Length: 427
Image 1 (cartoon, rainbow, N blue to C red):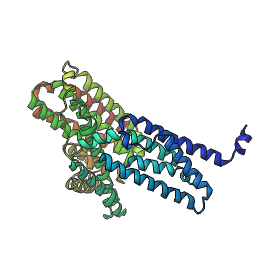
Image 2: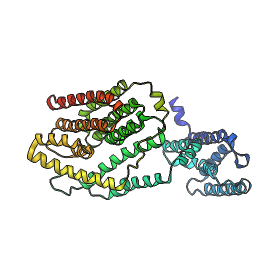
Image 3: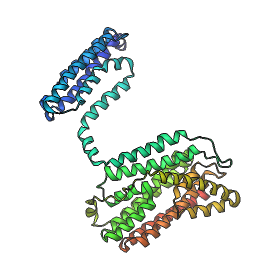
Image 4: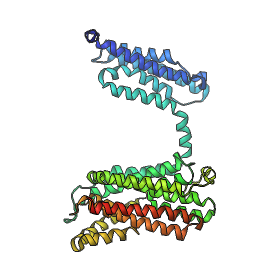
């Protein structure tokens, strides 16, 4: 049987692929037939199959100079031009999607012969998917303001223009972090923040307060705690739902930091993964148990989104880079002159600030510390930050939400301390 398949000419398989792919695209067009005005249609399954077969025939006649194939492509383009002219004249519709799809169908044959089959399959699948997503793209684009394209442009500047231009050699002799690595941390943090921003504003906008807390934790759990605490006091309602959002923000914070660990220090990530997964899971569990309430259904109807601030301001990126350099210098000198005791105190102090620059500096800095010590120091900074968030919720939030937040954070801080103890004394 295997020998029989080997004796079948390659042209047979390629012809079969061209016919199948062309037919699939044509069937897709027939699926859209009912929603398309008759004057805009020039064919469906059979027409697109014949277009693919025509491209195949004209290509194999002379695959070297391609004169028949190019001549056929010119002729079919002229026919489509006439159709397009009549369509615009009769319907005042200027879309050319179907014509472009037909031309892609005509080009399947040379693709099958000259390119890997997986690449051809990707092209066909992309065409099929994008045709089906027309209405979704229309609805999505209507919800996006023009400022979002400016935000995307800023991200491309940060990640695609500035980053490649920076040198990858250290500029300060005793600190091994280069300008490239410094800005890479900015890109990574900006990417996570941007993802959280897009998800919260456009994808799961109607998820309610707890979902806002989770996505806010991917951006900044401290900022999420401050915002949700203030909102709970302003609204004076659904205290347990705001408490749940605050605790959930801390749960997603552990996941965000674990992702950063694996990006910048894979070996350290292997050590910390059980601790961070456990702390994240226990945070979500405690957030659910201590805030279970009948006001859940009411909160899920909320369409408010609390984290719509653009996370990609260039000034904040520069500030983060400056903080990263400052923490690199401070950490180096503290270790040099004060040893482990000094870095332990520093980790607790940084917990009351933005801990990301300090943590990322730890994860990729070449300090004379074992990995378990770096992990413990990172968790100490997180523990200090959790205490700060508890204080924020007390002074800024509604008093009715304080009790479940205090209960949940008490256990989170306790388990966080246990992880620190294990890393210091059992690794």
